[in-house]
Image 1: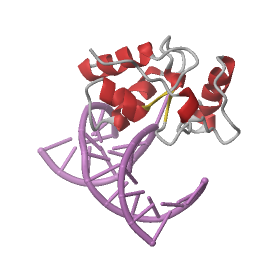
Image 2: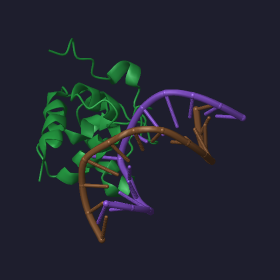
Image 3: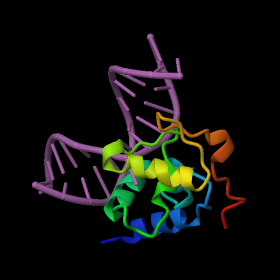
Image 4: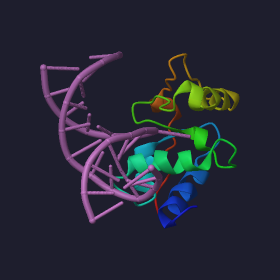
Length: 106
DNA sequence: GCGGTGACGGTCG
DNA sequence: CCGACCGCCACCG
């Protein structure tokens, strides 16, 4: 199932506060995996939508939902709206206002 | 072991 | 603002 890399990625995703979003690249960096933004998406995909992790709080660096609508993107949009994060019909979120900005990284 | 793949991201036109 | 390209890198057949 999950290797050490996945563990780190999941640990970061678990810290994203309700009502906030983080980007794949941001999660990768916080997990200590500098050039592995793609692996974050891969790791989340391996979980499936039934996981307890807030996978729906992770979006692309351009502020869009990357997941295709039929493959979970629709659910991701619903989950974000449900916790107060505005997502337009095209799946866009205003990062400037809703991106998670952790204080520091110990 | 090799090559294609993708829930990325930065750059360029 | 948007699409096309390209570099990255673990995973999988």
